[in-house]
Length: 273
Image 1 (tube, rainbow, N blue to C red):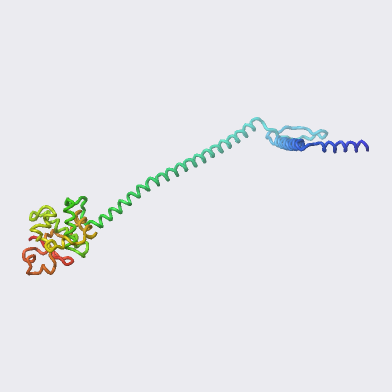
Image 2 (tube, rainbow, N blue to C red):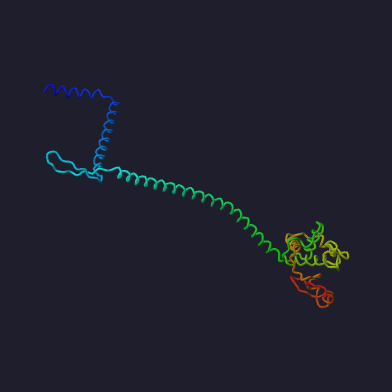
């Protein structure tokens, strides 16, 4: 009995002397041993799963016990199956990675194309807007001005348009510019704007004779009318003369000597027969 108490006291004293580090080592060793034991037991169980039978005799019974043992051929077959699975998995991984890379590259190309062609689309839209605006402004298909003017001629043309069509709409002002330009092109009148306006000491245009030509305040619509006439917008039907409706009656010089073409906004327009 005393021996048993001495044994327990010794064991208890041993545990009291174990440090924390020793305790951790012991725990690791115990865990490792448990793992090894489990592996060994599984291997033992697995070892009996082969296809070839080995006959043994249990001691004292004489009963035959059939055990399975794997052959080298079975192991090779299993290795081939595992190798095939590994290869298939690697191929699937490579295929997935390649697909991701291709998709990323395609996405980059799409984004680059969007950025590149968005600029092209923007330029096309801007050009289309300019074309529509220009078509709305110009009734004839002229690219260049139909007549080249000096600064003085241009200013004189704007002034006679303003003086002859003060307060009238843009078409009435374009018509005045059309008549002046038609005279420049006609062999019966001078070949530049300034001389057409002041021909016969200004007798051709009433505002020059009464002085309003010099005092009118130029407006934006007069500049616009001249610009549009210079690039070919023409409603004049070739008219070389115009007069106020009140001055273009049946007994007037215009009605007797000229061909009446049309009337617009208080002016009657004439040409030669």
